[in-house]
Each structure stands twice: as structure tokens, then as C-alpha cells.
Image (cartoon, rainbow, N blue to C red; front, side):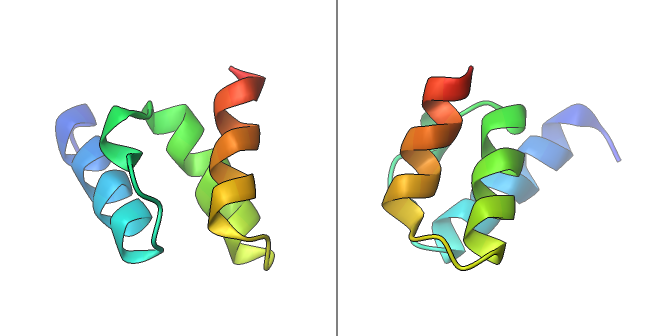
Length: 54
């Protein structure tokens, strides 16, 4: 899978998970945030933590 396609898929997953503004996140930030959401963390906290870790 190309980098662009992977980023597109990650952004779609972020959008589906309710992460507003996921289009401004990097692929690494999105992977981290989606992993946290997968562990039942709320989307706003997961997004904020992922962005602050970068």
C-alpha cells in the first residue's frame, strides 16, 4: 500500500472514530490515537495525547 493510500485510510478511520481534525494529523499520530481509541480511551484524549507525543 502506498504512503498516500495508507494516510488516507488512517484519516478515514479517524473520521469514523469521531476524531475531528484528523486530516491535520500525521500517519504516526493517527496510528497512535487509533490504538488508544481501540483500548477504550475517548477520542479527544487519544488525539491530544498523540499530537503532544510528536
